[in-house]
Length: 322
Image (cartoon, rainbow, N blue to C red; front, side, top):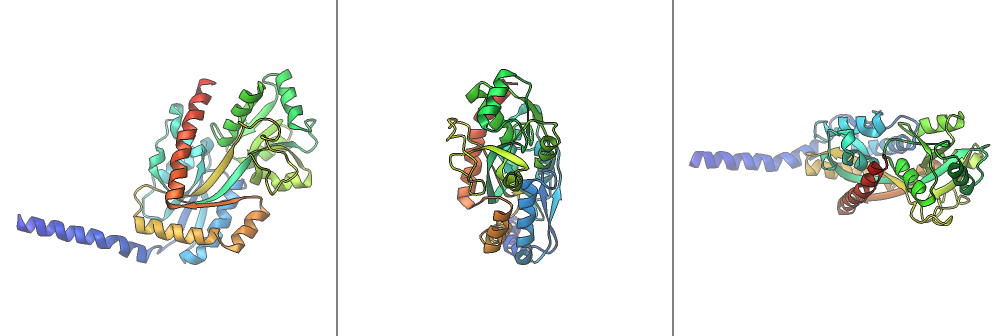
């Protein structure tokens, strides 16, 4: 009994020392940051800016790896199944991640608890936009046409039950309009679809096309937020246009598979947060139209949990409308 107790005490001491020792040696090699959407979209752009900025503090390469497909489900699945050692991280797209776990038809191999939210980088408001030469000059033009021709006008998203999809459903409920919904795997495909004349309108995010809107190649009809975007100050909000219930955005931050030691999580949080708060980060993110919204620790964990509860309501509602 004494020998067993000594063995258990020794094991406990070894476990207690393992955490700090691991953190002191972390990272010893490159870190992989999975982005669950294609290259070229706003999630990918923000992730690559963050990865490049954080490398100097990690002292190792931070490599963005795109694992696109199924509205993010393929990439999130791979991240959830990764070894919890801090060398495989993932960009968490909310509420897309939330709704995948809540939709029984998706049969996700992970839950919201499969990930640890570490540090949020971006809050990107929704944007409804059309091609620059589209006949729809305003949101009212678009809604009127969709009401007169139910199911004829096509509207694209970045995936089933993504924030874009939910925004379409909210708009349909608020206006009585009916769109033919087309699901893509990312923002880059939305641009190709709309500019190529294959889709009438995109429910997207500001960061995905703000430069194209500024140049006139695309026309922003409204931002799905309470306040105008600093990147598109001439584009009205849904609240201004009389649709205060149509509020939608995408938050994106770094997470890890559950089980990564707390001290390693702290190193990851510290290095990424330092990069996010740097003047260089703000300058680069402003250049691509992505609004920074740093959150860590209890604040990010609460946001993560609260959004799951909110997404549950909208997902149940969306599933009833199928």
